[in-house]
Length: 126
Image (cartoon, rainbow, N blue to C red; front, side, top):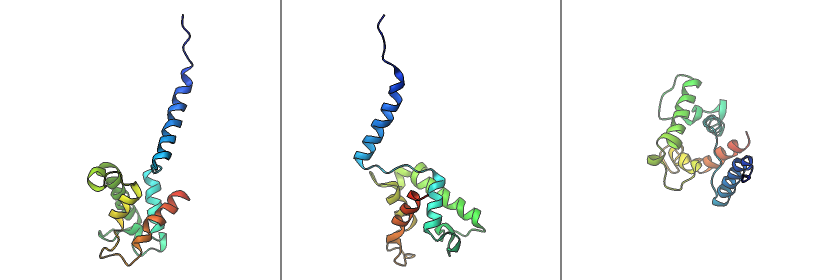
């Protein structure tokens, strides 16, 4: 009877290969939805923000509702409606920045150009 190789190496090898390919292709790391929400909250000013979670276009009654609106926006932009909202090959962060804080929009006070870097900082320093 022929001896088969030990299959326990397969999953770690595939994961290592996937990480290698992702790093070589410049793929963004994937963050959980709540991590995105918290990063946006902090980038928008946290508890001292004029507009919690950067929510300006919709009225909200409290922090929980503002968080829910932010979370829904991120989920729809990066997950359920990604094909419609993101450009081909666009990173999650760039796609969300275009949607969430568009540069030169009527609400841009000159700070939107820093939005993606600020969110990225909080994503990576959680």
